[in-house]
Amino acid sequence: MRDLATIPRSEVDAEQDKLKQLVSDVLAEAKKLGASSAEASVNLDSGFSVSVRKGEVETVEQQRDRGLGITVYFGQRKAHASSADFSTAAMRETVAAAVSRARFTAEDDCSGLAEADRMATEFPDLDLWHPWDLSPEQAISLATQTEAAAFAAESGITNSEGATVNSGAGIRVYGNSHGFIGASGGTSHSLSCSVIAGEGDGMQRDYWYSYGRDAALLDSAEAVGAKAAGRAVSRLNSRQIKTTSAPVLFAPELARSLFGSFLGAISGGAQYRKSTFLLDSMGDKVFADHIQLNENPRLPGAVSSANYDSEGVATQNHQWVKDGVVQGYLLSSYSARKLGRETSGNAGGIFNLEVSQNGGDQAALLKEMGTGLLVTEMMGSGVNGVTGDYSRGAAGFWVENGEIAFPVHEVTVAGNLKEIYKSIVKIGSDVDRRGNIRCGSALVEQMTIAGSD
Image 1: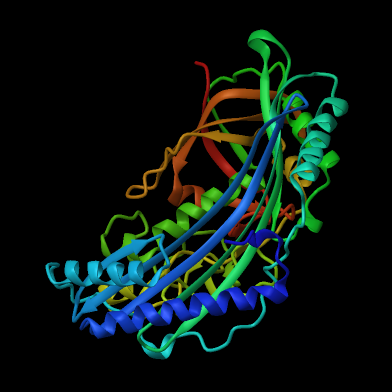
Image 2: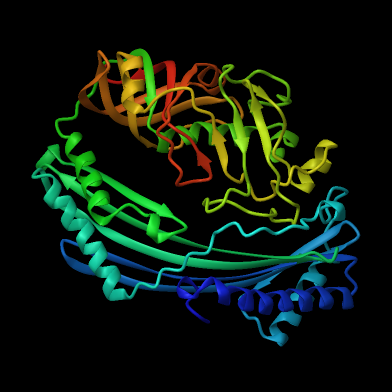
């Protein structure tokens, strides 16, 4: 198997063609064995990771994985089987295993392929393939520079948990018995650093990372190291605060988790199981007027762009929230049938959710907040998807008169997501684009902050 992370875009098509033929063979075998319909997917993934700690190489790892999965349907009975062996004999055995299992499964009147007329027919280049021809020696040098930059940036850095360079690529092909076969591929690269400031009981740890499809767009080693160091040193002499109610500003990388909980609540699975605090919420006003949530699945170069979902359904732009009002549910074909609706093309999740902005950068939002808590780290899950109750351990900074006053640790921020969503008064322009939810800092008007009594 080739190292995909280094092959040029011009050679990706040849690799995809091989996998398309394999998928076609799998589907033909399923039909031969009597399946009324079937869907299959294959993937190739490869990459490497290098970690350096205190100037010494800790790990050099190469990853190479592949997999084949087949789901067969006999009417509305289905079964799945998988294998990592692409040989003809193994393929036939895998299909036979799925067929054998299907004969003993119960019927489900909502199972089956997505509708044929929803299959993707256009496949524009989404600019997701950017190989990084980086040798292990060069990766080690880059990680070493990153860690060294952290020590050089702040005299308070006393130790390191290391710096890491990751580079990977993957090719996936999905097909079904509607005649659909689609191929996708993408690269992903990252540079990260984690360091420790201070000594003894006063030690504080923090990190930073840069991540994206194109290594040329990653932050420099110096920038990542300096950011990690600055974050760690800024947390020295951290303290608790007394329990209070106050505004809370979530940093961008944490703010997106608030909207992630919303997406879970409007997912088809949560809706048909009636296990969500936003049950039957379509048309309800959940957020303040200024909140708009737009999905842009075909955004060039973004980390979660796709032409079709995991069922082959064409992705499309959606406005999930307009002026604070819920516009629809994230549906696969199965959950759509359960709810008597049509798939939204979101089997497998969301594709580039963009949260609208109505504020300036984080410094501007601190001034607008005046007095309150800036949250830069969260611990634990603490989110009840059925009731909306929210309680998570947090650390960050106490803010007075719009300026950071001192670092804070061992507090809990709590509330109910229904009230939290309505209380989001500002979304900042400091957008974090490293995930499938692209969001700036989020200022919540009031939350309970549990600290020392």
